[in-house]
Image (cartoon, rainbow, N blue to C red; front, top):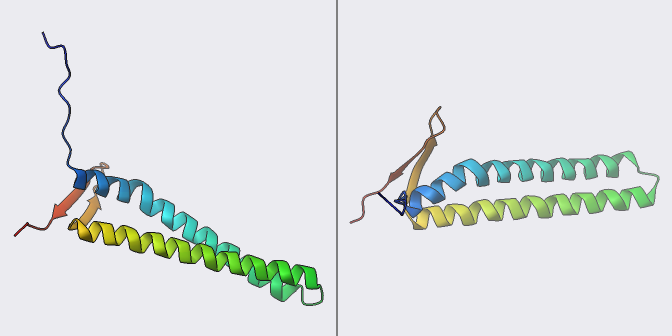
Length: 108
């Protein structure tokens, strides 16, 4: 009779790779796309409302915050790649069954 369940051991690298490919990358892509749409909305608002100074100012602010959002998403992507490269996590792939495959470089 066993009183304690045996834990499933997973490496930190496979966990990071799984979180990266399943959650973080799609989230970064979505937020990056939203920032681009917000920027383009500001451009449209700025160009379309040439005679109304309030709406032009609102368009400028939308463009500014769109650029800030794009810069933040690019920064997050670069930091994530820095972390993955630090731990030598390469070739992250997800097969059709949803399993994450991670190829690690051999440690010298």
